[in-house]
Amino acid sequence: MLPYGRQSIDASDIQVVTEALSSDWLTTGPEVDRFEAAIAERAGVQHAVSVTSGTAALHVAYAAAGIEPGDEIVTTPLTFAATAATAALLGAKVVFADVDPATGNLDPAAAEAAVTERTKVVAAVDYAGVPVDAPAFRDLAERKGLLFLEDAAHSIGSTLDGVPVGSLADLTTYSFFPTKNLTTAEGGAVVTADDELAARARSFKNHGLVRDRAAQRFPDEGPWHQEIHAFGLNYRLPDVLSALGTNQLTRLDQFVARRAEVKKAYDEALGDLDGVDIPFAPEGAAPAWHLYPLRVPAEKRRAIFDSLREQGIGVQVNYIPVYWHPVFEDLGYQRGMCPVAEDYYRREISLPMFPGLTDGDVERVIEATRKAVSG
Image 1: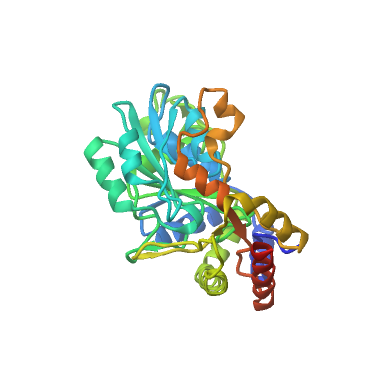
Image 2: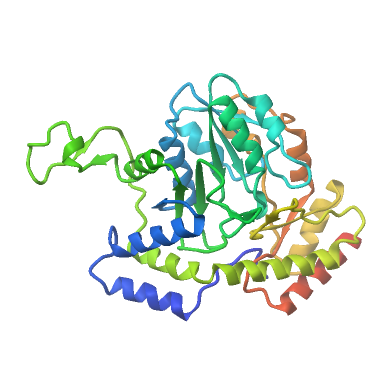
C-alpha cells in the first residue's frame, strides 16, 4: 500500500538525533534554542516557541491571545478538529464560517459576517498548504479589533506574494507531524513578531512559571524560587526532537520543490477527467503542497476511494467538517451550516503527496486514479 503521506528521514537526521542523545541535554537545552532560532528566521519573525505538537501550538496560541470563557473565535470547518477544539477547551464559543469553493480556505466575507462583539480571534487554515487571503484577514482584524491567527499546519515553506507564511498573521502555528512538510516526529511551533504574545506563549507552554525575580510576587523566598501567576501546561519540545527539526529545516526547500513536481504531474495527467477538479492556488500564492486534494463527483467518491485502496493507493479524505463530530453535535451544531465546506468534503480525496514519491510511484497513482474515476 502506497501511503498518502510519509516522513522523509535520511542518515543526517539519524546522526543529529544520535548526537543529541549523547549530549548532556535531552530537553530544555541548546538544541531547542537552535531550532527556535531557525524556525523564527524561516518565518521571518522575531519569535518562535517550540511545542510538542501542532495541537499544542494552537492551544498555546489561543492562550497567548487571551481566550477565555465568553469569547468567540471564528474559524473554518474544513480542518482537523484541533483548530476548533483547542479554543473550546479554553472556554470559547467556536463560530464556523464557510470556505472559498476554489481553495477550501476560510472565506474572508463569510468570516466577517460571523464576527460579533464577543469575537476575539479569527483563525484561518492554510488548507493543503495554500496560504489564506492574509491581507483580507489582517484588514478584518484591524477593523474589528481582533487577532488574526493562521493555522499553518500544512504550510511551512509556503509564501504569499513572496512573503513567508509565518510573517502574515499576528500568530501562526506550525505542525511537525511525520506527514507534514518537515518533521520532529511529533511537534509544532507558534511564531509571532509580537513580543507580548511571544512571552505569553512561552509562559503557557512551561506551566506558567515565572523565574524573573523582578516579576515575582515573593522574590526574596530564595534563589530556588519560581512562581505560577497563571495556569499553563508542559508543552516543551525536547532537544532530541529539536535537533531533528533543525536538520529537516535545511532540506525544506528540497521537500517543497519535490511536492511541486508531484503536484504538476498530477495536474497534467488528471485535469482532463470529467467531473474532476484539481487543486487551485490563487495568483501570488506559492504553496508547499502538503496535500493533493482532488475533487471528484460526490456520488462516485466512495466507489473511487474504494477502487484506489483496492489498487494499493493509500488515499485519505481531508476533512470531515468539524461540527459533524458528535462532540460538536452535542453542543448544538447542525449539519448544513456551511454548505460550501460540506460540498468540498463530499467530493474530496487526498492522493499520495510526499517528497519520497518516485516518478514510478506518481505514474502508478495517476494510472490508478484514471481507472477509478473512469470505471
